[in-house]
Image (cartoon, rainbow, N blue to C red; front, side):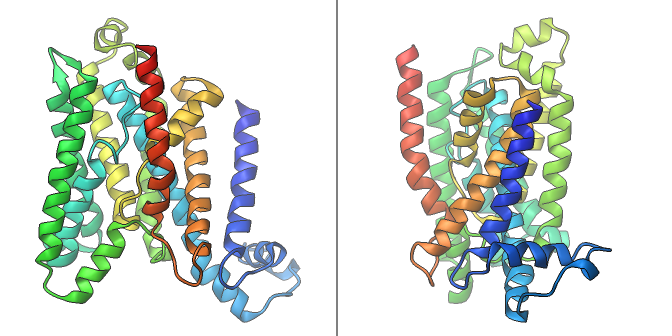
Length: 340
């Protein structure tokens, strides 16, 4: 485990340096590393100045916050997938498939276009997305329980139904937009993008993923027991009701804050946890940190592809993840069906 974590950490650092340098105006990896190192206290005097002011503005002002936001969003969506899969005890659970992303997008769009949550201040978008995510998780979880157990058919169908309802609400809200500019901004945001990344956007989602990740790691034994069933977890001494409420809360917080800054990016919470379990097994003590790193690396590289495929224009990030994630979900569904 330590070896895998160290290797992934090194891959994450290399990914950050390479991804910052790639774009319509490329910057050499060596100059990217020097520019970033020059911002570290006590090192700035020892770094030879071999870059231009344009390169420094691109690296520090534009792409570094964007790449960091990609790492945070990828980690948040991946860990949200792990939390939801533990909650419903099924590896097909994902914030996008179960309608959580749609619920967060509906309330966030309401706040973005009509200022419905302006009373909440600078965090109104994040809090509104959190409320939508929480309501959706509770609805899907309640509908899919049959005689105290999660029914997989009802889980998927209720997720699709709630997702369609939330998408319809979002359409009504966007069609009622008070101006064309607001409608355009909302449509671009709903497609998923990191193009608007700023340093100020990083603080809240970073704090949320760190706090939620620590809470989940502290409860990793309870999560392992929950995968064996509510009764088994209760027999082993865990408070199942409190654990489920905690999972709803942390999943809603992570999904809401990530979607608020990036829009809806689907299938990351499905693909990354599954790939992680294939690599290192199902123990949540190992799955959670590895999943966070893999998710961040994946979203950063998908974002690089999104801004290079039709450069100088950009593809929405959510479109690319759906192209790869849709077939992955079908494969996973057929694979699970074959085991029954």
